[in-house]
Amino acid sequence: MSLTSQLITDVFPDLDKVEKLNNEVSPEEEEERVPLSEFLRYQDRDDAHFFAFYNEEKFVGFAFTISNQKAFYISFFAIMPHLRSHGYGKEIIDKLTDFTSKPYCLKWSDWIKNAITWNKEKLV
Image (cartoon, rainbow, N blue to C red; front, top):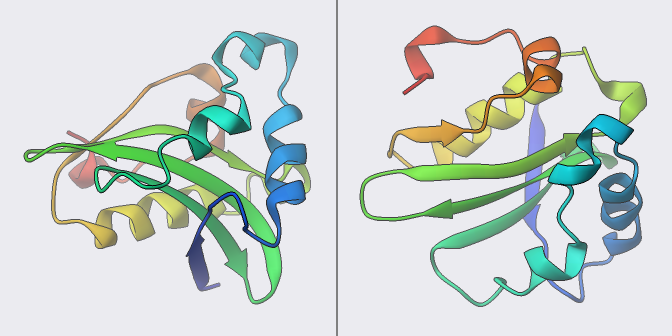
């Protein structure tokens, strides 16, 4: 598997898929859900990136990151429900860390613990 990524903007062709996935959170995650409009508000900033990820042409998920001079924060990411537990979360984290040489921070929650086999060398 080799994922590719594209930056998401308000004219992104698969914006409907991103919005649908963003709205498909479980009741436990509802408090953490960020409206799509909030992610898009940062599209012109150099310190924020909103990525869509694809396996070939199939939409897999998305991630939103914010950075400063020392590190970047993976604010939110989501994987299509039928593709979870197939290694996509780990590959997305790897792609994001390849994008920048900075250490990263990821909010830890139960759904992340269940979704990713962590590579301890990459944790900050």
